[in-house]
Image (tube, rainbow, N blue to C red; front, top):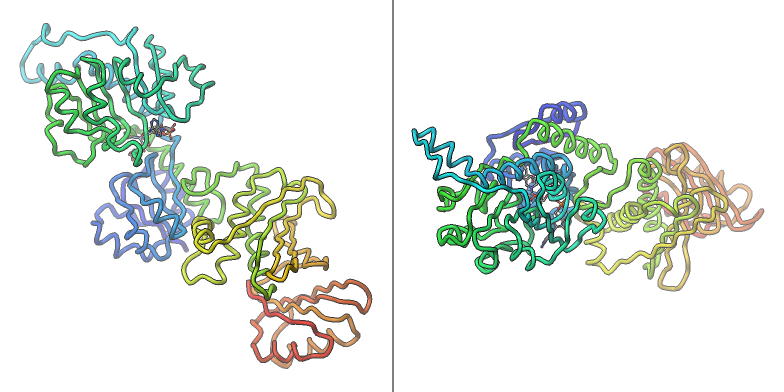
Length: 524
Ligand code: NAD
Ligand code: MLT
C-alpha cells in the first residue's frame, strides 16, 4: 500500500479520502532534520506553507511520486528540483480564493475605519470617538496588482462597494476585466492613481520586492496598501519607513517575508497585521483538503490530476480517452528502444483519427519517458522527461492526422535511424487496454506483457515449432502467440508472450536458427 506523509494540518474530509487508498501519517512535529529522515518511506507528501520542500527534501524522498500543496502558492516548493527529480506537484488553487477575497475586503474596511485600533483602544478603557474618524471606500480607486482568481473575486466585491477598480497583470483577460468593470492599466499608472493597492501576485523572481522603497514612494500620498499574497513582494523595511514618514496612510498585512515576523512593522500603529489567515475559513480548508486529496489519489492511481503545477492539464472528459494512451505510448517507446539496433536520428509521434483532436502533450511526455527510462540510472517520469530529453538533445516531432484509416484511433511512433531506415510502431486502445497493432510493415494485434520474444524471419514450415521447442527446453512457458507476414513464405514477424525472461543463451540459440533474420527478447 502507498504511504502518504502529511506535515501540516489539513481538513478531515481530505484525510478520510486519502485513508481510503493509502496509509496516512499526520506528523505535525517534524523538524527539517526529522523530515529528511522520515521521507524515504513515503510515496506522497502533503504540506501547507510552513514546510519548506527544498531540493534536499525532495532528494531525500527517494520513493516520492507527488507533493501536494494544500493551498495555492507553491513558493515553498523547489519546483525546478521537483521537475528535475520527476516529482509531480499538485495544489488546490481554486479552493481559497473567496476566503482571501473576503479577508481583503475586510482589511480594506478595517483600514478605512481604524477598526482594530479603535477596538483595542476601547478594550483598554479609551473611548476615542474623535481620534478614529475614517473614510468611505465608495468612489475610491482600488488598484489590484495581479488579476487572477483572488483579484477577480476582490473586484466583484469591490464593485458592489461602488469603488473604481483598476488592475495590472502582464496577462490580463480583457473580457473578464470588462465584465467586472475593471480598467486595465500599467503598473506605474496603478501605483500613482490608486487610493488603495491590493496585491494578488505569486512570489516569484519578478515580483520579489516589487513594492520596494521607490515604488512605495510613487504611491499617492496618504494611500493604503494591502498584502494578502506573499511576504517578500513588499520590502517591509521600506514600508515601515513609508508609514513612519506619513507618506502612506496605512497598511494591512496577512503575510510576511519571514513567518512569524519579527520586524518593527508588526507593531506599527498604522499597520493591521494577521498571522497568515487568508485561507483560514472552514469552507476554504474543507475544499482545500478535498482538492489536494483528490490530486494525490489521482496521481497514486496513475491518473492525470486536475491541478498539476508541473504537468499538463487534461480535462476529465478527455482523460477517459487520453489516459490509456499514456501506457501505450510508453510501451511503444520502450519497445522501439529494444527493437531498433542503430542510433535514432529522429522521432515522430503520429496521432491518427480521433486522437488527433485531443490534448497530446501527456502522450508525448509518456513516450519521452519510455524512450529515456531504458538508458537512465535515475528515476524518469513524465515530469522530468522533458528536462532529461533536453539534456540529451532528444526531440520529438508531432503530427496530427484526423482522418482515420484502419483504426478510429491509432498512435504511431516513427523512429528514423542514422542509416535513414524508418521503423514504425503503432498501437491502439481497446476497452482501456493497450494493443500493439503495427511493427513496421506488419499488422498484428498484441496485448504486450512484461516479457516477450520478437522474431523477424522468413515464413517457412516448421519455424514456429523449432522456436517453441527451444523455449520449452529452456523451461520458458509461452502464454500467447501472434504472427504477421508480408506474403506466404515471405518476410514474417512472430511475437511470443512468455511467463519468464528469456536467458541470453536461449536467445543466441534462437538467433542461430535457419530462416531467422533477428530475434529479440523484449522486457516492458
Ligand atoms: P492566480 O494565479 O490566479 O493569479 C495570480 C496572477 O498574478 C496571475 O494572473 C499572474 O498573471 C499575475 N502576475 C504574475 N506576475 C505578475 C506581476 N509581475 N505583476 C502583476 N501580476 C502578475 O493566483 P491567485 O489564486 O489569485 O493567488 C495569488 C497569490 O495569492 C498566490 O500566488 C498566493 O501566493 C497568494 N495566496 C495567499 C493566501 C493567504 O493565505 N494569504 C491564500 C491563497 C493565495
Ligand atoms: C495559500 O497559498 O493557499 C496560502 O498560503 C494559504 C495556506 O497555505 O494556508
